[in-house]
Length: 251
Image 1: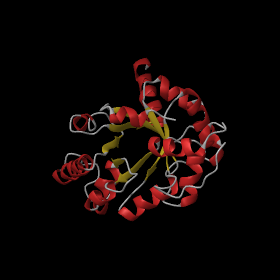
Image 2 (image 1 turned 180 degrees about the vertical axis):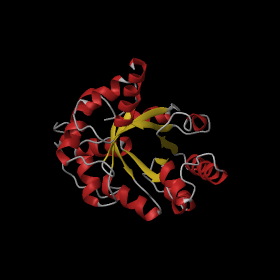
Image 3 (image 1 turned 135 degrees about the vertical axis):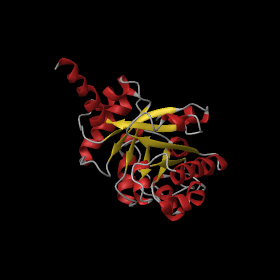
Image 4 (image 1 turned 30 degrees about the vertical axis):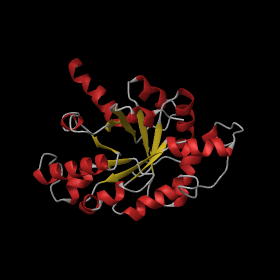
């Protein structure tokens, strides 16, 4: 299992990126070699098949690269399936209520926290024969559950969302949030700054973590100094584009 939560508990800042396009299992090795601490496979906007995600996670587990999945929506089949593949955790997009957060916990955590189905000797145990009494509490503790706050309603309810037992991270989606506020891309707008600060404060008050995903480094940097511990920069195809832009030096 991932040591990502342990690093967060130790006060470290961790940085990941989003896998949105490239389905090769080698993407885990590439992202790790680039120096990222974790990655999230995007099954909300991405077009990955179930098998493609399973293959990516299998390689990621083999090399110790923490890999989460952004599920398309809050449905038991999505949450359970990716956890059974061995994902380090899940990101629930557009979380707007404590009820959504509670359902995420219920589907991904074993009793007594939730009602995750018990099926061991699977990818999430690396097919090893394990003791459920030992493995299940450990899995509950190590699995990272992130609620993406990306709307005005989500901000208004963030205190209740992040207070749900089993939820670890209030994670900001800046593009959708600024869109919902009617000020798309204005990350320094006072309303957006206030929303970010409210989310950070709610997470800290509950002993949880906050973070954000930005496509560019510049808008992310100020928030690294304000208490955001688990953040994401760019994506697989975005990083390719950045590298490819160097072609201008040859023209």
